Amino acid sequence: MRLVQRRAPSPAYYLVAALGSLLTTVAVTLALLGRPDRAVDALTRIDPGHTLRVFAIVGVISVSGVISYRAGLWNIGQEGQAIIGALAAIASGSPALALPLSAACALAWTLPAIALRICAGVNEAVTTFLMYVIAVCIARYFVEGPLRDPTKMGFVVTVEAPHIGVWAALAILAALLALVTALYRTRAGLLMKLMASGEGIVRYAGASPSACILLALGISGTIAGLGGAIEIMTREAGRYLMISQVSAGFGLYGISAAWLGALHPLGAFLSSLYIAWLYHVAVNLKVFGLSSLLSNALVGAAMAWGLLGYVLSKYRVVLR
Image (cartoon, rainbow, N blue to C red):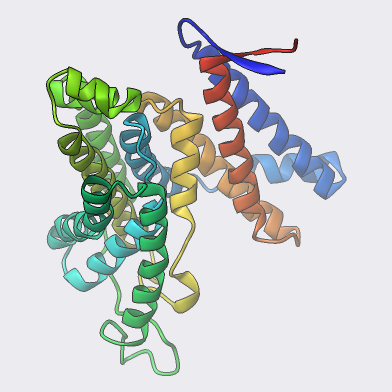
């Protein structure tokens, strides 16, 4: 068996991937619960307000993934960038300052990985993941130290972040999708897409690969930071971090949505809504007494299907 590159990509395979992910979720839910009525309950019972909140968070981080992966750059540190964005939002003290501060801090957090890629050729997948590990350690330090709320006696939590509503978060998501769609109609956006074909192609087009790397990874990290800020600021209550809450997993959800959405802004929008539904299915399974780790398993399966859709859209399988 071998893979042969298609003359033209076939996006229809992403629909196959989405259907495969859906059928996998239904089959797993039915197998775990054993009864069709319980499975239907787990698959259909949702909280619309909370689903929209998760959708907004995942959607923003998925846009981050679309930017980097479409440029052929493997930013897998969205979770760490989101953590830094959440810490900045907590420290800001006001909704007006929280979002720009989160974006700036997440961009600064991404710069070491960008510099190592440009100056030393170090693969960004390694550096962004290591920066995620460091972000977790730094967040724990701030939870226990500078940002700890002294009024919560007996509880190690940060002070509360300022609040924004879910509809404001959805408006931010819509604005980001519009900006990214417009970006890909500019020369800079087209050059970023060209990066996926190799740095030599970018040079041949008369542009600097280093500038494209800086732009793509910088925008990606900045948007992921906004996702972290939105996650903590849209909570109705408990807008603080605990040690156990430092890494919420929304970075993984956003990466999954980006790949399942064919690395396209509209696809990421739709797949983020699907991932938000998966999140609620996992919550419902937890109500039935199953492990909360199932959420990551279901989202991981969705990402696997998305990667399969990506491969099949570009290659055809030859069995002989």
